[in-house]
Amino acid sequence: MERFTVNGGKALFGCVAVPAAKNAILPILAASLMTDGETVVKNCPDLSDIRVSADIIRAVGSMAAFDGSSFWTVYNESEKSAIPQPLCSKMRSGILYLAPLLYRRGKVTLYYPGGCNIGKRQIDIHLDGLQKMGAQLECGEDKITLLAPDGLKGTHFRLRLPSVGATQTLMMAAATAKGITILHNCAKEPEVVDLARFLRCAGAKITGAGKSEIIIQGVQSLNAVEYTPIADRIFAATVLSGVNACRGMVFLKNYPAEYMHSFEKVLKQTGLRIVHLADGAVAVKIFDRAADIKVHTGFYPAFSTDMGPLLSAALINNNGTLVLTEGIFENRFSYAEQFEKLGLCCKVSGTEYYQTPKNSIYTAQLKAADLRAGAALVVAALAKRGNFTIEGLEYIDRGYEKIEDVFSALGGNIRRNTFEQQQKSKS
Ligand code: EPZ
Image 1 (cartoon, rainbow, N blue to C red):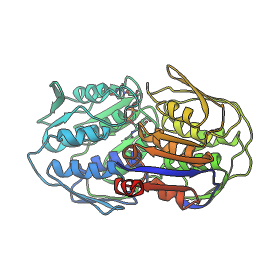
Image 2 (spheres, rainbow, N blue to C red):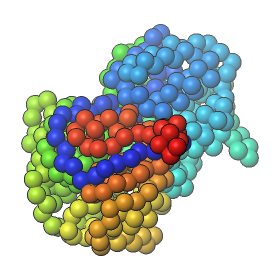
Image 3 (cartoon, rainbow, N blue to C red):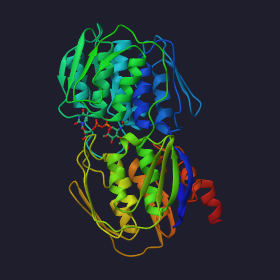
């Protein structure tokens, strides 16, 4: 088992490049199965979820190669239409292969998806929408099968709530369905818009992505594409959170300014200055300004649920209170207990989280329970004076390529210790 050792309390200085967004890349990789010929997705960070995507594409008979930055897919005819259970359990985004496999094979089998344990994470909207487009559903104890041997048909469908994944599934399904599909109450997240952009580059006819209503005229086939997905707003929020909590000055190259308004607005209240430049942004924090902060997370353009844990970490040294109300997932505050170990007073009541400073702690053993909670622990430990260890790196590696290198390059003292190194230092 690997873990981080962190000697916190150092200010951050330097430059960091924001990579392409995991949550934009994963649906695009699924959609690449729908394109004919060789599709290339560029600027991908080397994340475990991206490597699992390559395994899924190969498991269903197509070709995938990933060199740690560019990802190639070449579609192959095959009978394989089931995503093996071990791959489904590794990440939730296996669900994004429903529509591509229905288009390619007329059939898809998926085991109930895994992923971060941040809430119930149902899949009913994906399934209802696909059934409305003509797919037949067969439910087993631990898996589902969808059948559409003659293809899908365009329809009108209103999403029960604006789910990101379900909007992406239905947009992909409609892209090659017969006729016109109109989706109502869609998610407006930038990653939905980016998938639409990718599909349009491949020849799909989609209008309205980023608005509540998306209209799709189905086409017969999609062509190969070379594509660079949008920059990662959650990665950018992680670095801003680090600068706010640790102080210092960092230049973020490829900064996705247009998606950062709500996060920036809150951090500015505690003394962070952000200067937008043509090729990025500079974040500067010289002193802490105490502030009581209240934030509600919700569907875009509201404050992002994924940025909630990062906001908590950003405010670890803030001499005020934070009240964070979660509007999307039921179990987002797994870091509360860990933050207590860092000297905060944290209370969770249903979907409301409260944090305020209590005392100084100089050592603690921390454990990540999901991806963004893990990133929050990294930032919090870097910002607190003392020596800390963090376990649960498998969660953090799902969304960050070597987060320790990102912060070490900025002057943070964080190291990854392998099991062998830990054994050696004991003996
Ligand atoms: C995406 O998850 C992101 N993942 C999540 O990021 C992000 O937290 C989430 O959107 C919300 O912004 C990826 O893009 C890979 P949803 P997704 O479907 O698509 C309910 C991270 O840390 N729902 O919008 O799974 C669901 O239970 C991850 O990078 C249904 O009820 O999220 C949840 O309460 C974590 N039925 C809400 O909708 C459905 O069929 C939003 O989920 C689908 C969803």
